[in-house]
Amino acid sequence: MDSLSRFRLFSFSSSSLIIVLFLFYRSVVGQSLPFPASDIWAKDSELHGFRGILRDEAVAMIKQLGKISDSDGYLERTFLSPASKIATKLIISWMEDAGLQTWVDPIGNIHGRILAANSSADTLLLGSHMDTVIDAGMYDGPLGIISAISALKVLNVTGELQSLRRHVEIIAFSDEEGVRFQSTFLGSAVIAGVLPLKSLNMTDKSGLTVGDVLRYNYFDPTEEALLELKYDPEKIWGYIEVHIEQGPVLEHLGQSVGVVEGIAGQSRLKVTVKGTQGHAGTVPMHMRQDPMAASAELIVLLENLCRNPEKFMSWSDSDESSLAGLVCTVGEISCWPSASNVIPGQVVFTVDVRVMNNKAREAVLYQLSDQIYQICDRRTVGCTIDNNHNADAVMCDSDLSLQLKNAAHSGLNILSSDSGEITDEIPKLMSGAGHDAMAIAHLTKVAMLFVRCRGGVSHSPVEYVLDNDVWAAGITILEFLRKM
Ligand SMILES: [Zn+2]
Image (cartoon, rainbow, N blue to C red; front, side, top):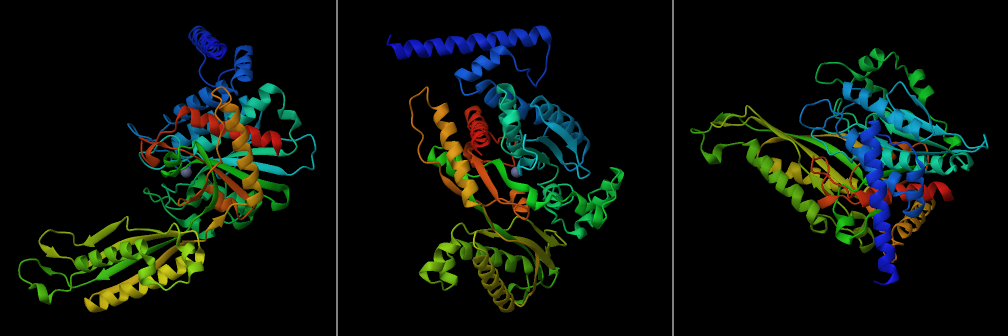
């Protein structure tokens, strides 16, 4: 056995001993998470890049949070729901365990802050969302909250928390997915001061509005009251968000983390196609105005246009790259009266268009509308297009992203020091999904770290992140905090 093998055997034995001691401790004391910082863990941390806190504890916290649901049998945790209130208590206890001062604001965002010795220092915000979609995975959102808590807990254990150069505040945002009210970013938009007042009138399934729910929560959401919750951009240095990639690129590259260059802008359309309702057995084919057949053609058109935009639009060579990442989706369709023996009278479907370049998105929408009207005219059906939502793309800050990338590089090299592997360049990625960083970009510069997820799958209970990738996210934030 060479000396390296002996060292590895020793490391394995010492970690196993620690785990056995820990399990013994838990069984005797009956202590649930969070774990107390003990000498055993501290020694383990020195040897192994704080594996105990940044990986094992963090994964256990994600799993614990993943069990807190408003529904039986699957994960669903929506804005200010009963489960979100239970989750809030748990997240607060973890933040306090990490040495943070905590509070919950009237929108339900959870804050955990540590002040720097220099009271005039600006503040780094870290965060992600605590709400979920229906039948969700447990990493989407909580990974960003928990990797930040874990990194600060390490600094608390090592005594570095009091010597941070900036104030640091974690925010667990109360609503990003928008499941309850179909309105995304309620939590982060209030902090950034960009929540449209009309959002307060949106209703949930029980008929309650956002405003009603906030008033039940002892907060009257007047324009002035909401503005008081807005953070002062002068006092904020920047915002960092860790999030699962929700796509397959990092897995394909064999990399655990990547830095996000920007978040795609998006538009949502509602297309209504009106034809002539009739009997499926008596109206000859050439005499029909069938909105279902027309919609089928329109949907195939959309797919063709977004797969091969150059065939539909004339772009100079320099413009062609601006169409990179263009994706278009019809995700919802309904028809009236929806019966097997009736030619429908009306079909309504949604269109979701995303691309990094805002001008390219406008050009795609213009071209799509033009083609839709031509097809509808040819088929003698009536078509209307409602543009219901537009959000411009957000570019991440290049300096902040570089610091995050350097932190990832140095963190991954700590993790790979045992294996002797040198970490390659940290990949850069685009985000096709919206994130709280989009809203916070109205307040301050933002940067994001994406973490590999299995098969690129998210918004599903099979969503999965390797324990070691959770560790990679935590150590990246730790290195960032140490060097900022
Ligand atoms: Zn998310």
